[in-house]
Length: 219
Image 1 (cartoon, rainbow, N blue to C red):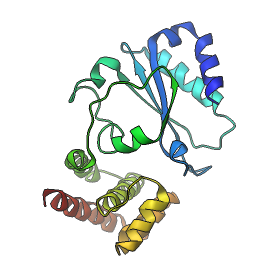
Image 2: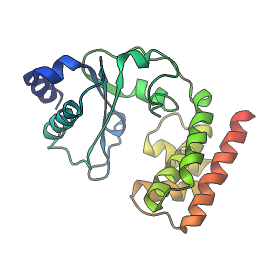
Image 3: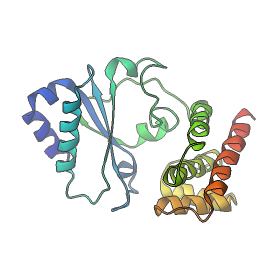
Image 4: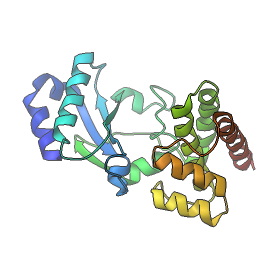
């Protein structure tokens, strides 16, 4: 797959010249990618703002090069190289902040070199992510709530001792620490199902868990 991506990029001179680095990360790299359920996650670093058509061509290259993999789609994030070296510049991608430990541990550099990124520890970055979840949960619909609830359950597992984002690690930690409701919500999230709760129950679950996690972090 990676060689096919590099060949396609080389054939597109404009795209190749503007693209500094391309990294694949996420469940495919962790080894718990679920065919038919998961996205393929890529992070692109550009030296300048890429025109919209360049991003479209990059996504097309990635779709064509990964067509033999049964995935739901390409999740492509991108950033300026200069923004990466500044603590609060650019987009606060969660994989570069609260989940940076997983990004560093599980990735493949498809093109270029791994960029210079300020290190961010999980517990240091967690309050900012919880604040963002609180902002999102108010207006989230059923699908958005399912995703937010799954993430909150995963954050609960990490705070309870899970040492990775691997789905099995998260589920086992939630079981071992007797967070049964979080475990059920997380399992529904993995199966792309609405959790066995009403929309308002799920919204309360997310709000209650973010408050409890914030208390845990603050000690």
